[in-house]
Structures are given as structure tokens and as C-alpha cells.
Image (cartoon, rainbow, N blue to C red):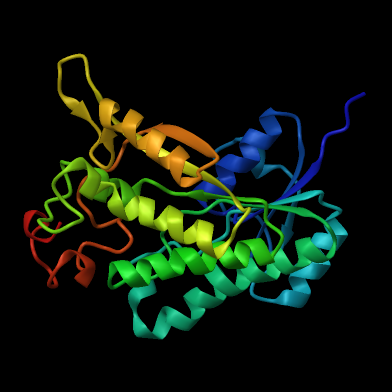
Length: 281
């Protein structure tokens, strides 16, 4: 009889954690959900997650994290918990709280997993903090990679959608400097991020999510934040040359309104505050 790993999933009140639990159930894994609420407080849609085992855990409390993970007997922790209210995250009175969840909470889980030789999978997006320029953004990616390696994580994913996908896109990127216009300019920042990660965390495996703008049957384009197929193929070759180990090809599904991009459309990264999309990208 095949024995499957026991998995603890954080952030199951959110959509990502909810879906991960259901996927694990579908594949026959023993999974335990967790979040900060005393009881499961996610969507009650009749799917498996609603009735699966659940434990309350405050990821910002290091002692509680160690107690919960050890008592669960989990072989793997899939970390999906995060502060995702991106607009509120930029308020001055929320910064410390957001950092304690998205950075401190993640560090707590990584520390416990490393201590007890429990595998950790961190699934997240670039919905984390306000960035003000390319240098700041790149330094945060670099720091995240360094911390991941120190925590014993084997691989990370570069979320090539959102900011990176928007910069790669001819539809969304209207910049006139070295990061806009020609193909080599639009992909420049993405390659710089990969280079920074490789320098900060040598040996850390990198997966890159590569969004592709596809064509509908009527000839119209589907998706905005990504590359068209021909450019995607060339970019994939450059990613491999840059040291990327795995590439996840995905449908570009960015809405194009830029409000959900990190940094948001009002960041100085795209220009002065509250300009129109065409003038700031």
C-alpha cells in the first residue's frame, strides 16, 4: 500500500489555500487546513475543504507555529497564508502588521520546517509590499531568495505575471526608456531579477511562470500581461541561458487595469501619482 505524505496547508480561509486543500483531497493526500480563526472560515461551498481537518494557527506567533506543526505530524507545509488586501497594505498604520504576516510569519514557518526537517512549499505572488523603483523591487526579490535559501528551501518561483508580465507586454508597457519598446528592453527587468536571485542564492532552483498572450478564434488576443507566442519562445531560451531550471507556461490573464499589479499603477515606478494607464506604463 502506497503511503502518502501528510500535508499542513496555511491560509485555507483564502482562495489559494481553499483550492490547494481541495486539490490535495482529490489526489488522496491527508491534509490539514489552518488559518488564524478558531474554526474554518473560508468559503462554505460544499467542497472537500469544508469538512477536512482544521487547526487554528497564528503564523506571527513563533511558539504557536512550532507547536501546531509538530503536533500535526506534517511531512510538508504548503504555505498559502498572506495579507492580500493590497490597497490597505499601503496604509502607514498597516505596514508593520503586513510585514509581520508576509515576512515574519513566513520566516516562522521556514524556521520550524528547517528545525524538524519538514519540507516547506511557499506559494505566493508579488502581492506583498509597495515598491517605488526597479532597484527597490529587485532588492526585495534578491532578499527573498536569500532568506529562502537560508531557510532550507530548495526552489522558488518567479511570478512572471503581474509586474514582470506587464513590463514584457507590448499592450501594457508604454515606457520609452531602456525598459520599454523593443523585445530586449521589455524583457530586461525580468532577466535582471533572475540574475539578482542567482547572485543572492547560488544553487537555489528557479521556476519561472511565463504568461503567453494567445489568439482567440476570431483573431482577437486573449490576455494582456505577457508575451505573444513567438516572443515567449525566444524569452524561454534566454531564461534557460540565465540559469532558470523550470518554466511554467501559463495563459496570460491579466485584466490590464493595473490596479492589481505590485507595485500598483499609482506607484512612482510607473510615473507620477494617478496618471492614466497610457501615460505611466
